[in-house]
Amino acid sequence: FFGAATTGLVYRGNPNLKVENIEGYEIGFIGVIASALFLTVDMYYNGLNDFISDLGAGFSGISPDIITRKSYRTGNDTSFSHAVWSYKNVGEVNEYGYEVAANYYVTDEIIFDANYSYFQFEIDKKTVSAADAEQIQPNSPRWKSNAGITYQSKNNYDVALKIKYVPSYHWSAGVYAGDILAYSLVSLSGSYQFSSNLSMTLNISNLLNRKH
Image (cartoon, rainbow, N blue to C red; front, side, top):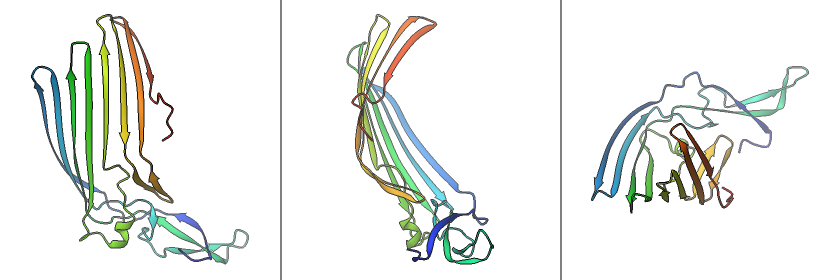
């Protein structure tokens, strides 16, 4: 990308970097339906001005973007060079989404729970160049969900089984970039209340030992 003579990277701060400004709005609902279903709905919108980019090429805000490599012995220029990577303000970005969560009490002891969250990330192309837009990633899936069942015994113990699913999404941070593959995790937890002051909890967060 930078030519055969470019053999390394230099990370530098950007003296022209501005503070990122966020203006956010949120609205939500909490309610109990038929004395058995506890429901929450939350929606949000965030407008980000002077959005700060990820670490990348051509983002330094200083000149030049390619610097000559110096000799460690003499301090003189060599035939090799370094690409300068940094951060910069790239314009306006909007993010919005919602989350729905529910707990359903089948009985006083058995509870089903589930939630679903949605996230959208949009770049204002009127304020962000096409080159900068290609390097901006939300580093988050479009949606994700969880579900589970809990048994709460009247004999001072409870057991819960949960499953989490995250779809595939692209992730980027500096020189590291790639696709995060979809994955699901099953978790098992339990607790016992010995007294009002003493309890024990056991949690297995990846019961099936799934790689992710």
